[in-house]
Length: 96
Image (cartoon, rainbow, N blue to C red; front, side, top):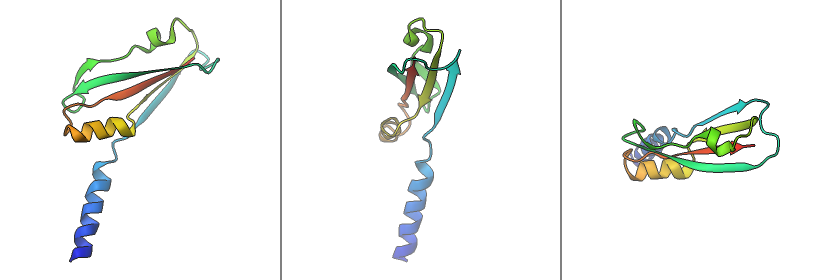
C-alpha cells in the first residue's frame, strides 16, 4: 500500500509540474551581436490578468535584427506554485 501511495504522489507531482514552456522567434535576420537583455513579465490569476509585460522592440533598442525568447523558468514556476497560481511571472530574453 505504501508503494502505491508513493507512486501516486510522484505521479501527481510530475503531472502538475509540466507547465514549463519556451517560445522563441526571430525578427529580421535574427541575433547578430550576441548581446542579451532580460526582463520579467508579471501576470495574475493563472496568467489571465497582465500586470506588466515587456516590449521586445524597446528592449532591442532600435535594432532591426534580434531573437526573442519568452520562457517560464523554474523560478517562475516555483513562484506560481507557491502562490497557488495567483502570481504567474514569465521571462523575456532579447538577443541582438
